[in-house]
Amino acid sequence: MLSQMQRALRIVHSGWKARILTTVPERVKQMRVSRRVFARWMSAAAALAASGRWNPLVAPPNVAAQPVALKDLVPKGWLIGVAINQNQSDGRDGVAVDLVTRQFNAISPENLLKFQSLHPEPDRFTFDAQDRYVAFGLDHGMAVIGHTLVWHSQTPAWVWAATDGGLADRATMLERMRVHIATVVGRYKGKIRGWDVVNEALNDDGTLRDSPWRRGIGDDYIAKAFEFAREADPGAELYYNDYNLATRPAKRAGAIRIIKELQQRGLRIDAVGEQGHWRLESPTTTEIDQTITELRATGVKVMITELDVNLLPPAAPPAPGQPREPAANPYVDGLPDDVQQALARCYANAFRVFLKHRDDMTRVTFWGVSDGDSWLNRGRMNYPLLWDRQRQPKTAFEEVAKVLMAKS
Ligand code: XIL
Image 1 (cartoon, rainbow, N blue to C red):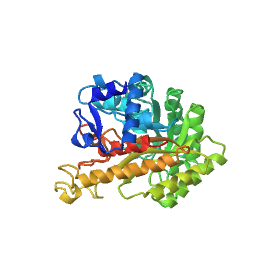
Image 2: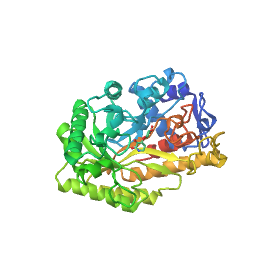
Image 3: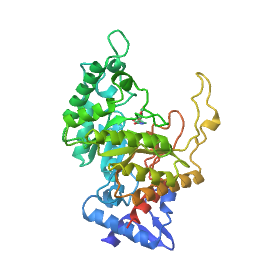
Image 4: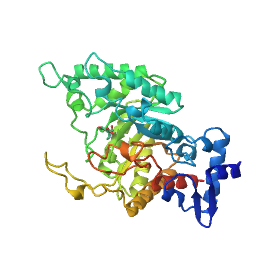
């Protein structure tokens, strides 16, 4: 089986280099792996081919030979996920669909299940594309994640408005929240594995964000959201999700307070998500390590829910009609190799920490399939993910795969 596999892919191992002599980019052909890792890689590929889950002889067009799939390398019981857009859940972006279904075992909806997509007007829900997203995941045997029920962003203004245009009162806003959660979570009962019930409720200093939900309902809007979600689907996992939990200890402490309060009220909370919108140097591996330890000490599991690594300098958008400063968009002609390598090291280091906490974590989800899909471009050229704009695996993919392969 193995030699047939090697012949099929025309892979050889000589010296310290595994050479994959198929139509993959030069850097993939020249991967440096030890014979031990190479042997493991080959047996993983052979096992996959034997199980019928992967056939190297019928690789679809435009898809790079990917000798391994992340979903086959992660620790048993882990979900490895990706956020997909509507072109992907509707099947129009066939190359991405192939990549997603071969590599991942969980999906998150990049925008489709946000309040404004689902419930644009008080008496109007839109479910067509949403139903297709859920069916896409279930048809492919993936865990389907719901994102997100209660958030200050991407929520239509009517949700918080009184008839006079001011802020709706507590009872009105609570009833709107209840109806939304009951309808949406109820519709996908038994189908959506878990929900980001409340998203981004905290300021960076750990105090509660002054969101319209909080202004209208009070601090217990968070508890109410979890209560309504449990009522709507007692079997669904329920999550609190936020960013900067690794870089801001005060914000992390705020998340821990939220979790403990939910627990004291006897409400269901299964996991906490650090979004993981990270940069090359931040957070450090020590910060990631400590964050997982501290969050896990509450008793809930930890997830990285929106992982990407922003390589661009912080920059305000250019003034209307003005060109952008070239320094704000340094990689228009491609990513220099040293930055490519630094990105790979950054991901590899993060995954080493995740593996150290393999029993504390349940999921790692990337926020987008390939660099071209990422929300971090916004008019610039960013390179935050594991697959490049041609949907080819980057050095970062290889390094993550190696770390996962060497796990035991
Ligand atoms: C982003 C999407 O990726 C974009 O397409 C959209 O324009 C804005 O929202 N935190 C979250 C996600 O919880 O929902 C956000 O997704 C990224 C930040």
